[in-house]
Each structure stands twice: as structure tokens, then as C-alpha cells.
Length: 139
Image 1 (spheres, helix red, strand yellow):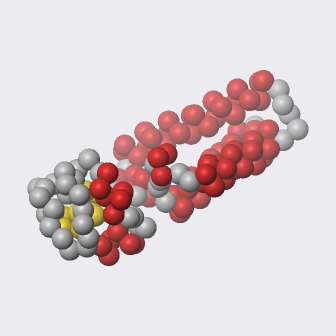
Image 2 (cartoon, helix red, strand yellow):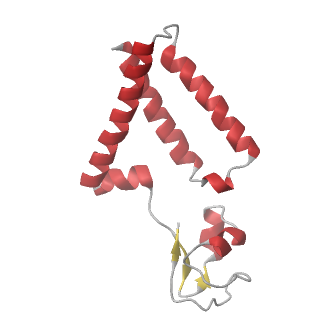
């Protein structure tokens, strides 16, 4: 039971930490971000396993972590509040072809990221400029 409790605590802690840290796609990870993820994985492994390196405990931990993840997904589908807490609320960055620079700065977004967004057809030249596009881009 100790392993299940450890897994639940670490899952919750990582969920909160990564929610606070913000979302990043794999393409936007820096080398340091990747190394940090490896260090977090190693530290997490130490906290989960402790001194017991048995296959049984590893299987129990994997089952617990996947179970928590699936359970939270089901709960998020049923609760709008829980979904907002875990996933966050989308933020419109481009509305009616206009870049909303203040919102971009709030989420630490750069124009190069907007340029690559699928919802935008042409290149963004700067804040307040019009883009020949009828779509909005949200993050």
C-alpha cells in the first residue's frame, strides 16, 4: 500500500508543478528543459521505488499511475470545474486577424510560435497588424 500512496502523491505533485510551469510542446523544449525532465524522472523514480527494485513493485506503480491518469480523465469529462483546473482555459491570441500582444506576453508566447500555428494562413508581422484570415488562434 505504501507504493500506491507514494505513486498518488508524486502524480499529484507533478500534476501541480507542470500545471504551474505552463504548457510546452515537444518542439519548443530546449536542451535544458529536456535534461530537467530526465532529472525529474530520476528523482521521481527514486521516490517511487525506494529500496525495492522488484518487478512486482514496478508493475504495481505503473498500474497505479495509469489508473490515476485514466481516473482523472474520466472525472475531467464529468466535471467542467475539474477540467478547467487541470487543463486550464484556452486563451485567444489572434482574434479577427489581429494579434493580441498583451495576451501573448501573458503566456510568454512569441510571434514565431504564432506564425507556425495552423489557424493562421499568412505571416504575422507585428502587434496590431491585420492578418488575412477569418480564424482565431487559441492556446
